[in-house]
Amino acid sequence: NNMAVATDAFKISDIDGVLKPVFDELQDVYKHNYPLQRDFGFAKVGKERSFPVLVTMGHGATYDDGTGGAFSLANPIPAVTKEAKVTPTIIVDRQYAAWSAISRTAGGGEVAVTPALALVMSNLMDSHAYRQECSHMYGGQSLVRVTGISGTGTARVLTLDNASFAPGIVAKMQNAQIDCYDDSVGTTKINTNAVISVTNMSISDSDKTLTVSGNSTDLGALDTEVGGGDAHIFFANSKGLTSTGLATIAGSTGTLFNIAGGTYHMWQANNHTVNGQLSFGAGMAGLQKPFNRGVVGEDYTLYCSGASWHDLNNDAAALLQVPSQKDSFKIGTKEISYVSAIGSLTVKPSQFCKAGEAYAVLPRLLKRIGSAEVGKGVPGAPGNANWL
Image (tube, rainbow, N blue to C red):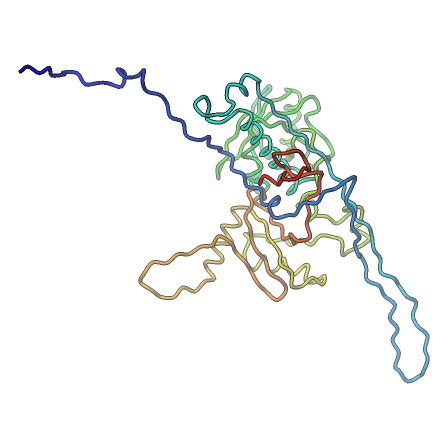
């Protein structure tokens, strides 16, 4: 019997016609993490939202030694209430997809990893939630400061300030349009001819830059501004049209929500300067400020940057006493809570919090107001729950 022996093995190129690529599910490099929208309740609003605030205590006490019978009473001084008013602003987000892309990818399956329309809608909601989170945290303030600039013509590389840098804000800025304002934060818009576009970025511990393009005259004016100080970045055409963010509320000493903090001291925010890294001692010292105004026993939430969370985690580990043992043990925490007689403080890291700042709030007293949550259905319709 004779048997043929193959001298050449099959190669991939020989069977190329029967192989096909295998695609896994779509991977999103932008993870959805919006803590303020998860932690703060939502309240529907019409024209505006109002609530009464007791801003002063009533007085009118009379003192007497009790030996002389009847005595005259002091004139009453009534308590003062004021009406706080919060007016919502509007964010409208637009995206589009070609009809051919929608029809070709409809249903997914063998023809597409995911339907184009579903991808557009998901990204639309994420983009909208991102803008809201930025507004909830820093509405009324700039997103980040520019401390250096290089380049010529219609392109520049902007160096960002470390202390005012929040990764959750800046990392999603590629292809966004921005405005730049002068160092006094809002008196003068620098790019008066056209918006500035973010074309690229470099984000690391040692390097935080945005590459931008724009009108050459505008960018020349930005050169001059940064050369003599700093500049401030806002989303294009957003300044003065965002909600009032935590940072603005926490720094308020003037009029806020229709009530004058300069007239009513208790309406002013409490501020504490740390002058160093965030620690257990700094957190407790910060709670001392509202305690001095009569607030005691409340459960605060402190939103801080990832770097500050790292410092607090190390601080908590240093305060622990570990029993002597030969076996290995785990150390670290997913949540840090400090408890004291004046109140408790639960620490939560937020990618949207700037490195040099942290905010202690009472979530039960905070509300997000608007016409509807960001959802997949008709705004305000039953079942259109917050997609987060």
